[in-house]
Image (cartoon, rainbow, N blue to C red):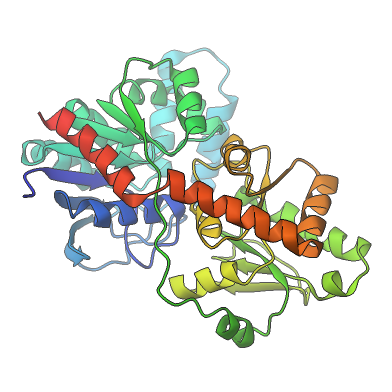
Length: 400
């Protein structure tokens, strides 16, 4: 019997929304709907850069989850946001009142600005047993969590970035009744920065559900592909894709063999940077989940060049498909996955990237062995039933 009513809060939500945090929230909400009654509070925006209202309905249902959508009152002005961000970084006056004013302005400009969502939380806080907030960074969490701190769980999805050290978050990270972290590295970072050792926590993450049929050959035929490596995510500088493009171009120039000559780089995700006109770099944009899994399953390896991740769902998906990964070792979370799984390689520079890719491209036995290691790791550590039971334990502890 579902005797708990739980509210998830996230900045964007929907099958059309392409973002790791947003997918994490949706997958977990749909799984948790088996255990309790789930409402999701979110915006009508699909795009995180503009926050433009695109969803029309105030209330929707998706896979047994009730979604309440609130209109964003002001789209983001990128020039204003950049100026406020610069002011935030350059305010060395020591004036605490001024600093707080700038930080609050930054939160508003960062958005999504949804005061009606926060008003709903305040007016309906007694309707729910627990509120679960996703990502520390955005307005709905910063303004909404303090209204229900005594019945809140925060999934911060934090990584070691400048914004984490902004003063306004020091109070925020002291408020939740519990944390639900993705990895040991995220837990260690948050507790080190905020010294909030007394707040209970569990480590969750996400599970991976593979489609019943993954048509690798059909995918390769559709996009005229043979041997390739895959990147999945936003094709942007914030994800360090520019460096990946440079490294791949240099690798192709240096290596001279039939395998490497035919090797391509396939980019899956919304493109936000100029990728040039290379024939061996294929940008597919946003594709459906079945094709995404086929892309990863048919690749030599998945590459994750990002320096800032709190989990990296695509790494877990690659492991689930027995595909090895090459990750940026500067990201402690990604390095932790490799250290614990032996499912691929870390790199810190071009030479290490080159060696990793060369080994996976030319040593089929090593490739298979690392892929099997990754599968064992994800099965042992990221099982949906375990994750849901952990979160349900926190919900029951708070609600009771």
